[in-house]
Image (cartoon, rainbow, N blue to C red):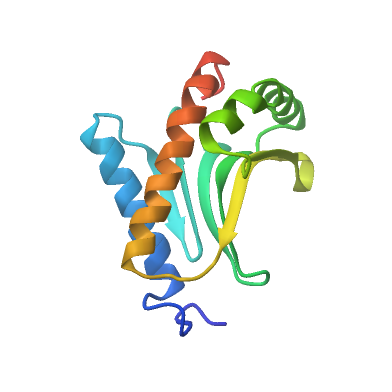
Length: 153
């Protein structure tokens, strides 16, 4: 699947889909006076507040298993990642109460940790851009106050 791949279940190429979601998320928080820092490349967009890009929200298209991931990634030092993993684990029930049981806290690759959910990859169309951007904003609105309380933004 090349970067221009468009499935029959999609009317937008993956890189355009990600860019559109990123634009919507950025515009939402800019309108609230809290524009995030971030970057978009290919099938991945990241957003963060504060100086640490290693702790960021992410939307990521996984072509191999046809999933879309939304979440908060801790890609800092192993010690910081473990501290955040434990701290967010203590909040998991309240997080799941607010966001649903599709949200998980997980130890991951390279000593990283994450709080995330996955969704089916398709469809990738204009309506889904707004749905995915809206869901990522819900996740950010739930998790960012906890992150700030922990002083890890």
